[in-house]
Image 1 (cartoon, rainbow, N blue to C red):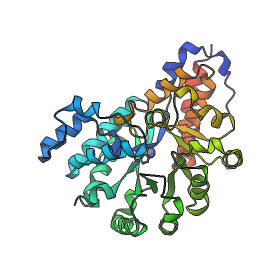
Image 2 (image 1 turned 90 degrees about the horizontal axis):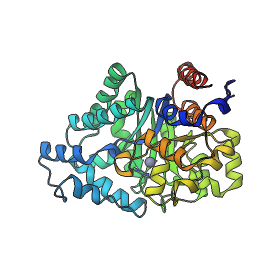
Image 3 (image 1 turned 90 degrees about the vertical axis):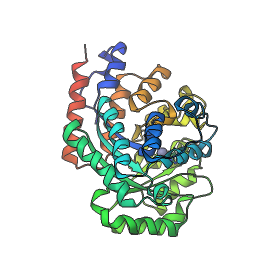
Length: 351
Ligand code: ADE
Ligand code: ZN
């Protein structure tokens, strides 16, 4: 239930300030997608890795994507510089500092262990490095951060089971599992048995679905993987029955507007389905996906979106931030604390 805030009496020129300042949770962020070109070159030098590009500018110029796969090819190549625990810690710390500046109070961070274990980097090196940055963010930045292990869906079910086994000694450092990488041709049911095992282990479950893939992949993730959130899910807008199901259950979607435009999931932000999803009553949230590659962190996503959607105002800003807390994997008492902070900020902006 929205609080008794008179959103219509919040001036529109206050909106950019509110969007920046409002407390929010980021629930769809690939830590490898936060690797900025500058850090790629620093780590390449640290680890003696040769890169195919002469410098930062040349690398940035290669970020001209036509679809998900054209992005993934460059994204996986960028991870080749990550070798030591400290590299993973530095990458996550850089993100968490930017998140704190954007008033992210909660980050549920994806990582792709198979991208690293395939190169001979142990899963322990990856998790220990990321975990150290999360703990430091908690104590020094006041950002609550946890890790979600993602299986690469273009690899086999056996490979996912093997990765899960490797992660078991670090079970306490992982709050859930996800599914990412090339979507089309890799339907959710391929991973039904792995997810069943993850649920037995008490892990939360999310999955990318309906980014490029059809609405049936979203229903598949709900029915076969029993996920608690859908990552992207924008193709649900094509299926009225599915929309109704998502609205009735308030099963959250973690939507990434700038990513969708860069990967040509939709043509422009003005044509993005998010307004339709929000109006239909879905628990949709705004996130940055791979901000180093898509031109912006979470506040850049909020600001660009509201700039492109003149019909949106303070009510929608509040709703999106509120949804991010509702959708997060934290105890209800913690959600209530952040929600009250959000309500206070908006109530104070009423004139
Ligand atoms: N891995 C990193 N970003 C991704 C995206 N947007 N979709 C699928 N897999 C990803
Ligand atoms: Zn993603």
